[in-house]
Length: 126
Image (cartoon, rainbow, N blue to C red; front, side, top):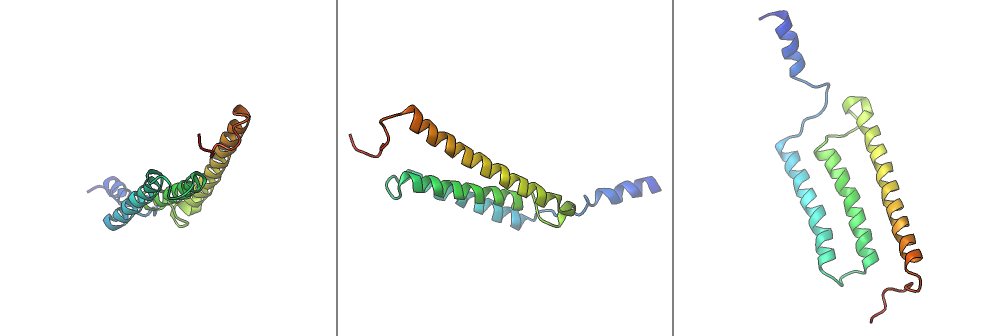
């Protein structure tokens, strides 16, 4: 074997200390993802268990938790890999998600209030 081959072989064995997932961690991530999808789905489909605002809040909380599960179990983001840059990516992602969620809720609320005047209390029966 040449020194050139040994250098490339050694470099191919690792990728800078980034952790690799095990079958167990992938199965845990998959189970959590299914659970975090099934619970909000069941709440929405079982109409009448909770109010629409509560159901929307529960769905948003579960969505944020599911994003974190995907980042940890499938993207292997933690404070140790890549000298902490993955944690910076996580923080940036959380900020973007919070801005997107609050902005979307703000726009939808104001569109409903401004485009449907006189329909302030939409919970009344017909």
